[in-house]
Each structure stands twice: as C-alpha cells, then as structure tokens.
Length: 228
Ligand SMILES: NC(=O)c1ccc[n+]([C@@H]2O[C@H](COP(=O)([O-])OP(=O)(O)OC[C@H]3O[C@@H](n4cnc5c(N)ncnc54)[C@H](OP(=O)(O)O)[C@@H]3O)[C@@H](O)[C@H]2O)c1
Image 1 (cartoon, rainbow, N blue to C red):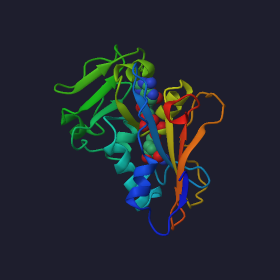
Image 2: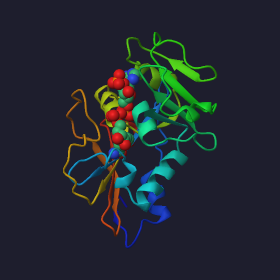
Image 3: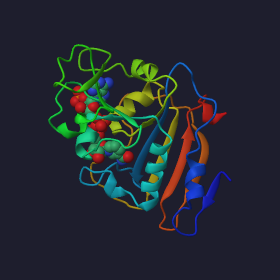
Image 4: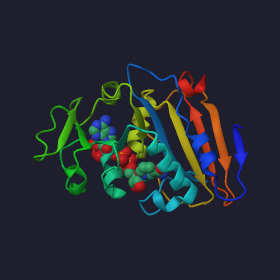
C-alpha cells in the first residue's frame, strides 16, 4: 500500500515499508536520503531544536532510517544544536564544517566513527580527529564527498542550510518529510533553503498518517532509483 492511515502510532511494519531501501542504487556515488520534520506552517525548529517538533513515530522513523544507513551526513550547526552523540553500531558519521573548530561538541569527535569534513585549506584539525577534505575557501565540495561515499546509503540529517546546498546540486535522492500538526508562526527557516533547485515535481513513493495527526511522506527526486 502506498499510503496508509494508522489507527494509533504506526506499526513497525508500516515504518519498515516506508523506509525500504531501493535495490538499484547508484554505483559511482552514495544514495542520499534526506530526513526532515516541519510544522504544518513550515517551521523547521522550535526554539532552535527540531526534536521538539517530533513524536514517537518520528523517532521510530529516524531510528529505522539510521538502521538502514551506512553513514550519517550532517552540518556542524545541527550537530551542535541537537547535541549529537557518537553513532551506535557500525554507523559512520560525517560532520560538514567550514573550519576545524569542534569546540561546540568536542566529545563527538573522540569517536573513531565520526569524521570532520573540511575544505582542503581549512587548517589543521585537533589531534586525533578524523578528517575528510574536499573543496576550498570555507566550502566543502559536497558532490565530491557524495562521490567519495560511493556505494553507501547515506542519511542526510540537515540542517536546512546544508540540505539546501545538496538539493540544489541534485545530490539528494529521497526526501523523508514529517509534517507535525503544529502551527508555530515565528521566524524559523524552511527545512531546505538556499540556492534555487530544479522545480520539477518529485515522485511520491510512500506515506502514512498516524492517529495523533503526524503525516509521514517519502518522495524521490525524478530519475532517482526509488522514483522508477
Ligand atoms: N527540522 C528538521 O528536520 C531539522 C533538521 C536538522 C536541523 N534542524 C535545525 O536547523 C538548525 C541548524 O541548521 P542550519 O541550517 O543553521 O545549519 P546546518 O545546515 O546544520 O549547518 C550549517 C553549517 O554548515 C556549514 N556548511 C554548510 N555548507 C557547507 C559547505 N559546503 N562547506 C563547509 N561548511 C558548510 C555552514 O558554514 P558557514 O557558517 O560558513 O555557512 C554552517 O556552519 C538547528 O536549529 C536545528 O535544530 C532542523
């Protein structure tokens, strides 16, 4: 079923169906899945935190997506704002930043499965921190990072700035969008913002609505594996 209305919170089967990884994926770059939550009026955070928008089904979806990923890709601002911890199991984490300043979340980088992704000319990283370098002048070359992660399933966890750059460059294959039944007003940015992206409609892949009124949608970029 492509869309279901759940009687209570979503069943594990429904969440599993929602996050199925397409068998056919690109070989020359990573398969990138962006997961974001918005209020019904488009806010991406409450007082600087996206977690405050969520509910148990959103947490289950987040865990299911991480459970099917080889790596997480996230912006430094999000890692700091959301107090990221080292990933569990074999999951790798790549944190994109313009400079080697890890003072916002130093403990995160003590884990050898966490890599700081920096421009080549960004200066030395603190001792012991794993780094991946690409691009120059405060801008990591995101296309080249996605190419370096070829063959991996990557969960892109935002934030909106990094997501905007990646979407505009056609580097995101799928969008998992949770819409929370909250109307917040305020000045929170959209979940994806920055340069203009291709305006072509994305393909609906799967969705569900839970009893508390949270809507879970999965779209594939036209031409991406899940769209065919
Ligand atoms: N609703 C959701 O699902 C969701 C998900 C994640 C986060 N959030 C919220 O979003 C907020 C943070 O988002 P954000 O947009 O400010 O930050 P972000 O996208 O997490 O990260 C932006 C940071 O990454 C750097 N950056 C971006 N592109 C880069 C590149 N190509 N090379 C090197 N560095 C790059 C920026 O550098 P510069 O400073 O040089 O620009 C900036 O420091 C938090 O409040 C968080 O709670 C919401």
